[in-house]
Length: 567
Image (cartoon, rainbow, N blue to C red; front, side):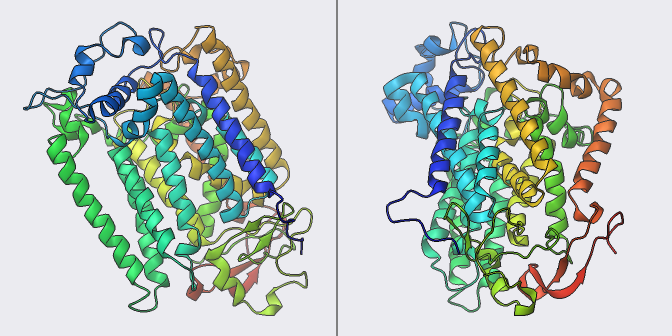
């Protein structure tokens, strides 16, 4: 076993988390120097959040009537009138149709340092997101430290995370809250065994409640994570005393849901903040989802959110295409009679305590009980808990995969069928930012389980996305593009090379269907590639023992013979 680090020595994981935090913060801060539109540093919904933050700092209320009357936005949003978003309520107040948690977070920096301090605060949150993503990858999913550091850094210094790291929208804080919730969900508080649960469950409850207060559109993601937490607490409870945490957490969610609805009825006059929006006075607050939505047509976003020519994730960071095989791997591991796949000769290390070369401890509570109960015949003579150079990767438990895949699906489906459009006046990927850290963890798990050419492909694609972001910064400082308009005219040769093979969904069905159908096929093949059934070579697998919640158990062994499908 690798010896523990000397007392006083900072673990390598801490250094790596600090470095990726700095990278994420700097990348976001650099983006703050690029204008949101040619006429101002902030645009679209950003002034609404900043005016509300200013009102909270100066007046201790949400009413922005005086800020609008005094044109307080002109130093940072330009001299043109702002688009009208607020309706004058019965008491004469104007309250922005946006949930209040982000303005609350930005009230102090906005009041003391203006829009620059507000964007700097957003950049610090971007750095915190990068650090937490690395920590979660290493400590909860046992991803090798170097791989996690490289993957998180490339994601943090490229679009859309770097862009929304300084745009005044709730997307980045929501991503931080969702990732924190998953980190808690996959930790000891929700694992079988005699673990202290109170603090972890309480922290989880607070983090989940933050999501709808950032924006009601995050409610489906919050509900998916909360549902998983309640299900896991119920499963691990063995008696009335053990069921107290799940009852308390369910009661907390119910009470906070009532508080949310009551506050919105009293302050905004409806069930959501959109009730105070000028645009929705005739259609009602739920017109935010569209006045006559075509859900069949919106289904094209299932692929378009990834590969749209201007607004797709892969257009600006091609490495996000690796999410498709990562989803395939997750689906394979979640199948009812699924089994975790290990590379040839691989024996999973003890998930309860894995000592990495950086001497940091990796906690994998989800599989601890199953691992300890396996017969010794299924374990190699190699000392438990040690990882030699180039170790095989033990895939996470089914519960851990569910903690990533279900919220990701909720966020993706919300962006597909609930959001009014994916081609709006904002930087691409806005509706998906909340779940991108979870997507990043899935990609890192895929790369950890497939060393070799796939990792080099991921590195190449990730560097291409970082180059695109650097080019965007250069063109933005030269006033050739902004974050809201003209960004598709960026001079990056890599984006120019990729652009012709991506469909433009703004052209209508007759204009995008050939490339759309092509990418549907490519997407299916990439998802299938992630499923070990279709891989060549031999791999040992074990059917799970259902009593252990789907982790690899004592069942029969099967193999993948070279050049054939699974037998």
